[in-house]
Structure formats: structure tokens, C-alpha cells
Figure 1 (cartoon, rainbow, N blue to C red):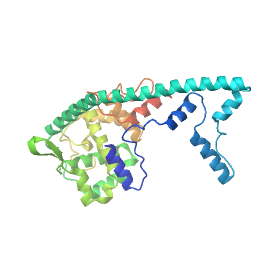
Figure 2: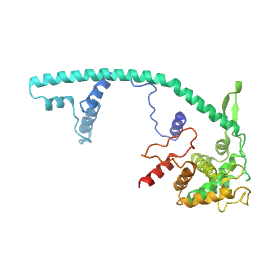
Figure 3: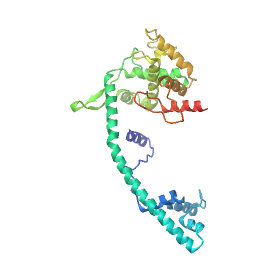
Figure 4: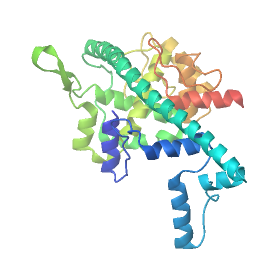
Length: 321
């Protein structure tokens, strides 16, 4: 996932700084800089060089004057005996720091090697369960006809105007998904080899302007899916059917949707006319305990619905305020 995001950013001309694959090796220079910064509270040699390089080049500096080891001795040792005593103390501290740093690095490497098999075992089980759930859904169904790209463009322009507009756009995208192939592809031995393009490849081939806003469209689509989940309605009734005034399609009365439409009216009445308030209302409907107690991150545990972090953060800030 990280590699795909990095490639997407690089394709748009962004500079991506990748972390080193292996931990940075411990050298004498890194040990000295760490000892100066963490133990003696001084500045590293790199800061001192950058400070005076800027001073000589531009005639001005940014930041405080470097706190060096020479200045440390000058401030804390007046006589020769004090300098010798301070030198011995600093040498002993540096030796203890170097030994502790090397032991910590070695211990961290051992811990990572021990944790790796357990992590990948859990990750494989999670992905297998997810694949099994996806295989159960052979094809999505809807009562609406296939939406046109012009209808999606019109709904996209009106999506930010109201929560109802956002849900109508998401409903159109859910309807479009029912008419494309996004099934799994299996290779030799019955293993999953990938998934067909679905909506993404369709937009990439036939509507490049919509494909450029693919992530935004998927956000509206996920919002419509959570809206149906919160209202308690499933396929083939689209999300737009639950709105007070659905735009076209299956807007007539449907059996078994009275309770779902009542819940939909309650959700739209709770939100404040913004998309983030709609997401927060849906989050509280799906998981009333999603608001953290002390600003901690939302715990995504098995069995809990997937809720956007922005909605959880918005709810926490409103509760604190």
C-alpha cells in the first residue's frame, strides 16, 4: 500500500523521501552526536557547521549559537584539576552511553525478528478472511438503471452543497458498480491472482476527468454505503431511495423500507448540513462508542465497523469543546 501511494505522489511530481530498508548502522559520529544531544544537552556537529556556514554566506543566522563541547568545558571547568575531573566524568558517561546504545540496537533487532513471523501470520489470516467475505458477494444488485457519466458529473458538482447531494452521488456510484465487473481472478491452484478493474478501470478508460477525482468519488461511495448500513437497508434498494426526495430512479414506495426511511430522516436531522457532520452522525449510528475518552486513536478491532478518523476526531473536538 505504501509503495502504491509513493508511486502516485511521484507521478504527480512530488518528492518522496523513503525510509531506509535497514536500520541506520551505528557509527562513531552517530554515537558522539547522540551523546552530545541526549546526555550533555549540546548541539551536534552538523548544526554547528550549518550555523556558521549560513553566517559566513549570508551575514545573518537563524537559531541559537551552537552549544559545543568546548564551550561546555569552558563554562564548567575553571582550573586544570576541574578540567581533568570533568574529562574523566564525560569519558565514563560516553562509554556507558555507547554500550547502552549498542545493546539497545542489538536487542531491538532481535525483537523485530521475533515479532515478524507473528505479525505476518496475523496479517495472512486477516487477508484470507477478507478475501472469503468478498468471494461471498458475487455481484451487487440495484433497482436503478445504469447511471450515465453526465449524471455523475452533475451530482459531483452538487455534492458539496448538502448531505443529500453527497448521498445521491454515492448512490449513483453504487449503482454504477452493479454494472461493471470487479470480481476476483484466480490463478493456478485456486489462489487469488487479483481483482478485475471495476469502476476504477471504467472511469480511467471512458471518463478521465472523473478518474482524476477517483479518491473523492470513492469517499462519497463509502458514505452512501455507511448510510445504508446505518438505516438498516440492504441491496437492491439504493441509498437515494431512502432520502426524502430521491432524484429519479427507484424513488417510489418500496415494501419494507418504512423503518429505514424513518432512520434516514433522523440521521439527516441530526447532521448540521455539512459532510463532516453527516459522517459523524453515521459514525454514532454504526458505533456509539467510537468517541475516544482521552483523544486516543479510534480502535479498529475485529467486529467494529470501519469509521473514518476525521469523523472520530470531529466528534472528540465537539465533546471537549
